[in-house]
Length: 175
Ligand SMILES: [Zn+2]
Image 1: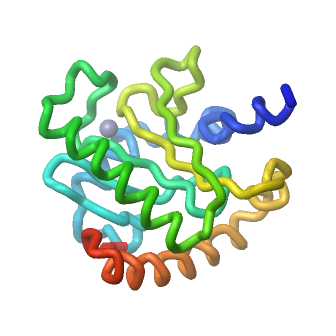
Image 2: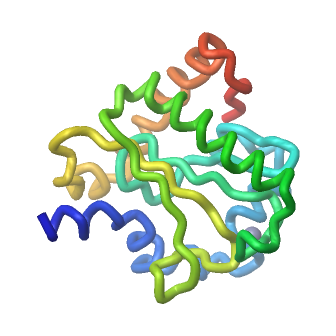
């Protein structure tokens, strides 16, 4: 059981271990995405609201692992105004609904990490992880071990998401 709990909160660890988030030092990748709406397709941005952005995690723990972040480079919740906080939580609700519809997930992990000691891979720009979970999915290394498989499944999932967003009356999927 303890081992499962360890796995449960592994997503940020991949970013941290690979150190890619930090190598990208002309701003964090979330800021680059935020500044380039024209590249939303390439960057696999799902949604872009007035204050928040929803993207696929480049280092997914599971198929459908999304990140929701403020457009602004802010490290702490205290720095966000109420409009942004409202949008953040509403986007979590919508993303969870979209993923539930398109991935038939049995459950979700939704979480945030603040500070390197807490495992944040990108501590300067807060983001919420949404990770779909399926019964018996704890052995995930086979999935994350092959980036090609993941990126193909993201394309397929994006297609499903575009259709599902329309059906569910959610904001249109951009990426
Ligand atoms: Zn940033």
